[in-house]
Image (cartoon, rainbow, N blue to C red; front, top):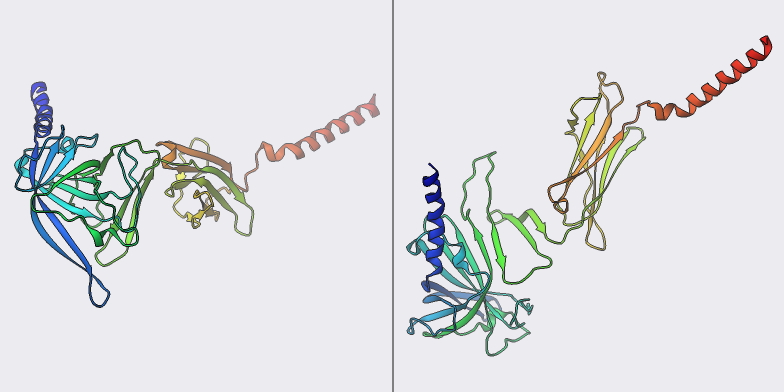
Amino acid sequence: MKIFTVLLCLIPYAGVLGFLQVQWLRCRLTDEYVWTNAEGHIESNNSYRDAVLQFDNSGNSALLSDSITFLVAASKVDMRKFVEGPVDRLQCDIHRYSKGMSRVRWPSLGGMGHDIWFTCTLRHTAGLFNITSFLRVTPATTMSAHQPDFFSWLTIGVKEKISASAVMVLMTRSPSVRVGLQKETTLHCQFAVDHKVPHLTVEWHFQRRGGRRTKLFSYSSHSEPPDVSLTTKEEQIPSVVCEANGFYPLDVEIDLFKETSSGQRPEKLGNILRSSHLQHHDNTHSVAAFVWLRPSPQDSGCAIYSCRVSHVSLQGLYIHKSIIGPGCWTWIHLTLPGLVCLISVIIFIAVTRRRYF
């Protein structure tokens, strides 16, 4: 059984090593032509051309001189490292990628503001994964800064050789999923970039056909932990309020619990109300969760309430706060009356002793 397990581990690893030795792949290039028609509307037309993706580790010339060749220089984000299985199970597609009016310089070495971009996607024919690499190309001439880049695409000749750098790669092992009603599934996303990223934000979005996009999840490497407070408010209807202040990014979870007797497991409250998020000038956020205290006839009127806050900045930990609810009489509440009573008893005894002695 141990030998069988080792062999299973070696099979995919050998597949990865095998693909790292691949020098080139045939791809389909989707070329796009964009223009403004007589009515002033933007139109586009796609054409499909044969191309070659060549992994160029030493500045070699094109292996197939009679085709369009993308010479991809070696980098830290070689997409071949993510491929599993034989080459004949892959489909390769190259597309132009538009930055619109943006002229942002990529942070890696050699990045220029007028760089143009392509995406290269490798798809497993059985739907096991999709791998997309962003290819950066520095053209000999700069584009106009007064119009979107798709109006002045780089013209690609029949036997054009395009030198590119792979600067970012995205991979998913769930390119297509089917989920039943009221069922859950797991979405996979993996990425790598060719430089150290000080602040990075990753977001999952859901978009219905013809509908608006909804953000499902957001992660940011730049985060601020929340400052948590738990208070009670003595109003017409008392309440317990848990506030999380000054956190980033936006997503935060707040749960409230109630403990009515010592040693009893706290009960998670389900009737929690939440305020809308408040964004501050430094882009941090604040939000409050609260519950109205309407004790049932079975309740003693005394309980300990606790608040648990989870946030990505806490790295899997929680912030806990606890407070004694209104209506509880403890030794703290009895301190002042108790002292008054004790002093009165002492005075009474002293006076009585003087009368009889």
